[in-house]
Length: 445
Image 1: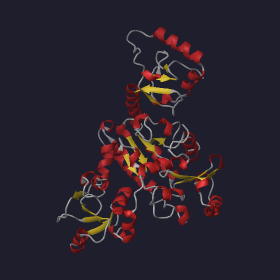
Image 2 (image 1 turned 30 degrees about the vertical axis):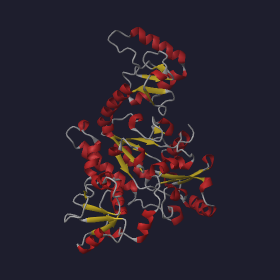
Image 3 (image 1 turned 45 degrees about the vertical axis):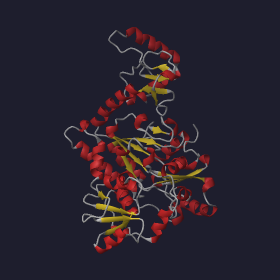
Image 4 (image 1 turned 180 degrees about the vertical axis):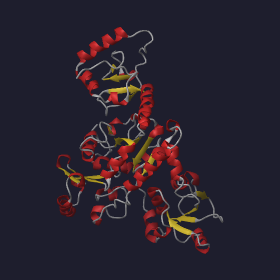
């Protein structure tokens, strides 16, 4: 390959992932000759270092100087190329340039979680012996090629089940978005799952981010995604791992195919494998999420100047339509000593467009309760108002439409479930990353 010296001032996201970068790293003599020639051609009007726009194995990608990495505040981009770091200023410049490129193609960015979002994985050691014959039978009976969704991975000591509808989901989202994987699993796991999802490397390319690539432990952030926050949607089952980016998030109900995750997340029902069923493709989370993404994409690109739009506002506007016109009062849900407005269910309801009330008023249309024999529940019955469980809120949020109230009554079984000690949702999700191959959710570092 013919390699020409590149400047970070001219680099785009495509350039960062191009093969010529690898060639220069693998051949230091070529790289050194190019840098010396470049410096000879540089005039006073050209940018000079420091500050250094980025580093490759401790060497500035513009001036070639050896730099103490501890002295530079840089964003690691190891998933694009081992040893690559760029400054915050350079990363922002690349994001701006790349956004223009994507908008010219009528595309946005989509960051996809793996575990319990696109697929479900489990360690072989975590499978009950009595379930193995059923699993082997499913493996033999399934189709091949794109029809295959269940995989036995002896070299990983794991089983993986892809979520129904994943093939069409990736094809359709790829038309509208540049796709990225972002998992708290380790690098080996992320790469293996990318092969299952994208065997022909059509969708993801090198955009596979694993736990070691995060700049904060146990936290996912768009700082390692070279895309403007205003153009990124996120699909994940766990809100807590995205503390700075909820506005970009489309949260899905967890795909729990294997038994191990039932107890891990404190679920009271059986796994899909134990129940002998699977998620309905047409009514499942991927179908619902695809519809939402298509609506957001269409809304943004119908604007006179899509480049001036913020995808987060379009997502927020769509979310607020879910429970528009609904007025809610909570009963035995929010502790009295807590600030009601900061409780996660109050915030969820308002994000879905509902109006929440601290006390019963004539405007109230729904009592959301975790107990049956309360004054508010009796009031709702006398005044013919809806009496629903907290699950009604969650289902409405996951499916982006008002759930049928009759399907979510307050029952003693649901009350008993709510009285159980709550599971730390975010911690459980991190521990389950990579199929639970690691106690800290990161695996090999």
